[in-house]
Amino acid sequence: MQRFDSVGGGLVVGAAVRATIISHERWGVMAEVLGHETIGASVDAGVIDSPSGGPRALPEEYPPVGEQVDAVVQEISRYHPPVWIRLTMRAADLREFSWPCGCCGQLTILSPGGDGVTVDVRSSEGPGCASFAAHRSCLAGRLNPDFNGDRARVNTVGRDQPTPLNEGAEANVAEPA
Image (spheres, helix red, strand yellow):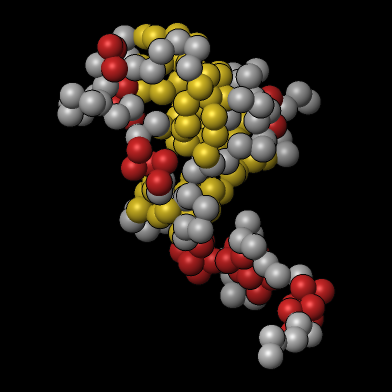
């Protein structure tokens, strides 16, 4: 079985990326995410800051074709081919990207250091992937209480964890006199 849904597996919602603007469209811009050029990507005018203050950037406010921009992955569609990436270029999203939790409906922060995770749902029966965001606590709280290891991993995955070697090394460092 051919699994198209593994393309771009290194990308997750909330990740900061660099992208090159490749065309202007009436609804926004087409882009290429650096390092993932084989995957289609776009930015809707509603998630490009408008210097004129409108809710959507005007075509003349789009970044120029060929310019590299900072963006955040807003959505990765892997349900049907082709895989597609939706980006946001809002300054507020570049600072801190949030999305509604699939468990409680409240916003969860998916930027590094935030309280959110992305959950990918896949099946051994065939390709296609559905994703949703969740607070770590909401997801861990819905797991069987007997699955202590799974609950612990949900709460720590992606977070910097000191290794036992580092903990011991830090404990043995002498304080300056």
